[in-house]
Image 1: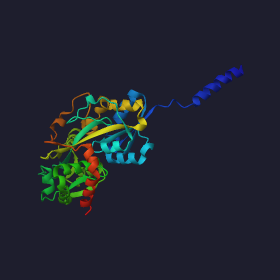
Image 2: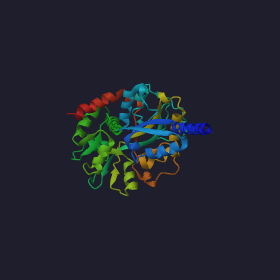
Image 3: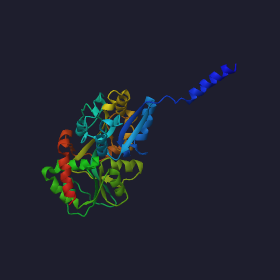
Image 4: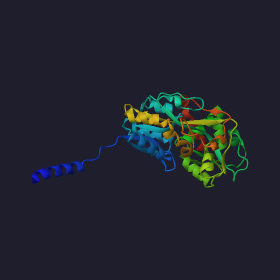
Length: 333
């Protein structure tokens, strides 16, 4: 009798000591502002985990350029299943690493200015670069890139480094799109107006909102944050007559996850409301996929670019190093 009681008790004790069945995990590399408490990351994580019954783990670095740099450093040993936060200025170089697999996702639901086709990367949002100004510090903002570059005003701006920041790279390409072969001369003229060059967007925008600089490189959508979250119309984007450079942010799955059904499921989920609803008022960009409801009317009142500027990814990949070196040679004088 004692033996019969003992064996079930032993078995129960053994089972209790076993770990719970491990959840399937998906590792997503992205940028820091995406995973911050006010960013879309927490909402996306909760929504996807509720749908998949899995563990979604974000690993964040400073910016999209830093994402590509980290991936190159890690190579085939990367832990990333999904890389989220590159933009089309980096996608050709990302493909050349040989670390990405085709997405296999139907992009019919994607709505991007000018359309979008790519077999490796899936867009999740888009926006236009702009210079945002403080109306309490600046009465007459420049009305064009050439006005900003070539005026004799003592205006000071904050920008980001194109080697470490996707907005910084965006400005580099914006300057090249407008000035072409004269970009180096344009940078030399703009240099006197640059109060600081920060590694990423967060640092320069923080300087701006702290009143240390009246104008900062950001997005046409940045004023939407201040209007919706702060109830303030103090900060506005300056419409530039030459047009504004378009940024399309994308995600792709690595070859490590080529046969991972969970990675494919995440990319598909990314194009729908569970993900896209978090974009407008948490990433403060335009959604690339379907949302549950129309955007806040404030988004319709933002600067509408007179022209969309965008280099093909292949052209950026071919010239990025030379254009960054050109920028560096001027800005380091």
